[in-house]
Image (cartoon, rainbow, N blue to C red; front, side, top):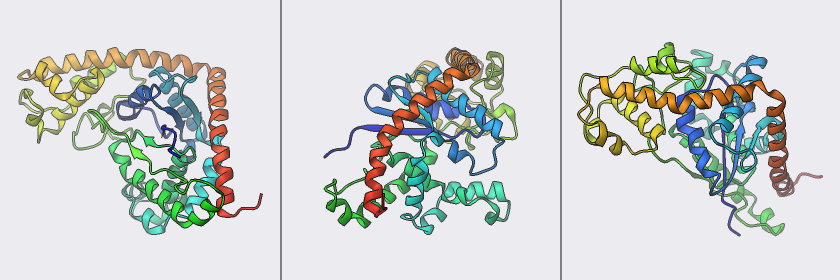
Length: 347
């Protein structure tokens, strides 16, 4: 029996949301609710793989959920919730810890990067959760038998691991799955859904580095709650080169900062890079940067206003997250019941 077309994705509440989160993830979530069952999570259990101040974690959880809604997700159409309210995520994550291999985890480049930044030269100083969290990520996706995940480029390796875990589970327990009269491919091989420009937004100060809240320069990152003046200032001071914009995308090769700003414009305006260059090719930065700043403010400012209104109404946010958790649990519990029977747990 074919799997229901279902999308799952989530954002970790470990800092203020920025333009990379919006263009690389949230903006791509919205149209999918017209064509798929959509489940969008605030993955707070992932956040605590490194230390988080509890009050900051709560605040960021509300902010991400608010950003989902302010950006166009309908909580009546999409399921919006925070991960820790559905305990089946943790249970399936543990089972997948026992399916996945240590070697698989050790190859994860994001672990190596984070272990270096969190533990310095001693990677053994980081939490066990940081090492094993790709299993939990796989559980987040497969708990709902999601067929697609709109992921950024930096998450492709984790999605491949999710597929490996699904394959191994289906293979290791094929006899039990068949004996229970279930489809032999119990878990789907989830596909990546990466499309369009600015799938990976880069720093405004260094086009070779990903935009990040941890960057030493605040001018490198546009935050979702930045005011109009701040957004405009950051874009106008963004690092560029002395050459005018080319008329075709090929002309952006080797020009990382220029390519980044054009891709941001394309994504914010729902146009292709070639269409943007058709309009601005031959122009200098004195024309393009103010146009990009005006565009960014026109898109982001209304979202920031709506986000603030929602964050200030915690009772409403609690209602939305609680309702979303109930709906997510209704999908997750029958799947977990089958998993428990498959692996041999006595109930």
